[in-house]
Length: 121
Image (tube, rainbow, N blue to C red; front, top):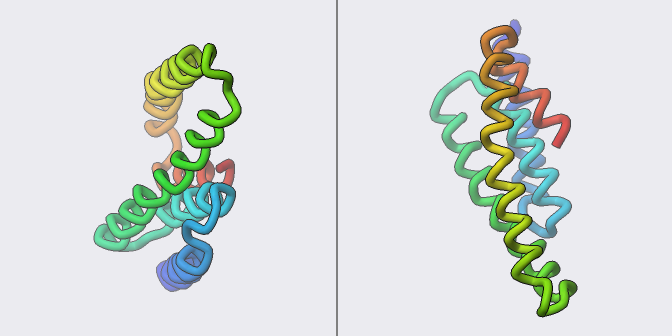
């Protein structure tokens, strides 16, 4: 019974994701959130890989417009500093994520972590 619920939810989320995929930065971010939730629900590894592929495709759809907006709105004199700070902050988040979610994964099931972070996104 529980497997049927997971399959139905997974396919519903997939259909909704495909219908809104990549039309704007907000929808791309929403797509990443839905796909992350779906990663916690999928019953088969090949479906997991397909969702990871879609998630990987949606990241550039979010990053490209945000980079262009920063290039347009930041003055030329400060652009290098802003992008340097952005790179430093995004690069430093990975170790913090490992410090937080590594021990947490020993206590909480990975599926629940994926669904929780997907809802937060």
